Length: 323
Image (cartoon, rainbow, N blue to C red):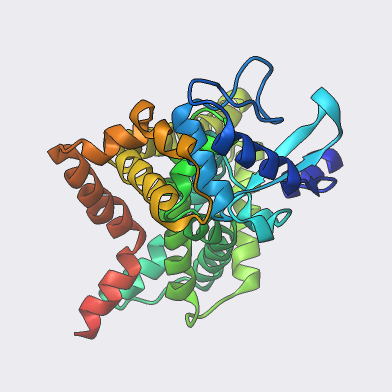
């Protein structure tokens, strides 16, 4: 358990951004047709033209940091959204499956605890003090885990994810931002409501007792199914979050991300080589810059309206009541 906690927070990992600098130089100078190997990539793999431009954008602009534990081929790496924030847990790059898995139980609990505070907001009913405190604490956890991570990924999620070489890392930015905003809204929603530690502890204790003993009608089934039910709920919620993020990303946001990565390389980096210009025709950045399709704009609009609309629902309802 201790080792899992240390791994979660990156204990024992030391910044090694000099290795990223070597990759940056190789991406800028190696022949266009060559694949550039990075120490954190599996043997035999590396960065193609798309990955090289992404690495130039991420490392060159300082939006990519790397830390490692161990040495040689046994080294384990963690990646970060800023070079200067390397080693800070809140800036660590997570793959999409990890963001979805961590978000799922928090979102489920938040939806349960926020029912009473939301009724107070909408109907001006009295909110249960235990629910208000539980909602506030969950909001703080979600904000600390996801919001800073999501904010740091704005404008650089594509190139950072490509540089890590981890499959299915790009959609994590959409999950982090939406869940983090949801947590911030819940925190603000319950910040000035009445709290009760004893009421919250009583709710938790009663739920655990009913779960273990099966005394509640909801839990009158075998212990196996009492354990299986919440695990299944978390799994389904994680898959729903992951599927939604992947859909929005691959239909729309990957094109915005690739365009942004190309813009950084072509207009913002002080480093200029002939190889960098020659990489474009072989890259996805070139495809994204010239590809125009309605689903790109509609996908971005749908994410803002549906996902961010849900995440910011408490704020939107409060503004509606205000005016």
